[in-house]
Length: 227
Image (tube, rainbow, N blue to C red):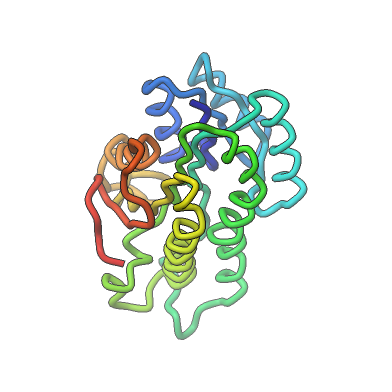
């Protein structure tokens, strides 16, 4: 199985890649900086391949599709993990909309155009799984304040995209799900959260679902949570 993980050079992305490698996948380590991708792939060992990829760049995505086609000929798993701006410093009423727009480019449009660009490779795969790494901050049910507006609104949009992609691809056997890893102790999440290995385990669960598994859902630790 060939899996691609975005934002795989640190935190949840790196641990997700490590767990997928342990499960027997070949993993493409995608990161915005070539050096970060290469260093991470080298550290993770055999069957980890570096890929410089800025998910906001259509040119990068086209180049990545060409490289993957040449090296592997297909893709089985896409984990859309890359995200920015956990904006705890602002609230919705006074939010800097430039920050919100920037977050949307990475958190929503990035996964969207990556799915579009890699769809021929995924269709050539045999175990098509798309995992959008979301957050409880994007749950309308849990959204009780206007804090982290850029992050929350873009994750809610990612959840909506998950539902739409799942519906479009259901007939082809794709399983497309959103996963909240919970509050994890990473650079973005800050100290005090759960171990990164626990957060990544739920992502890997969705990436390795058997045929006939759920699609179009929102999960944490393998259990459905409210939109």
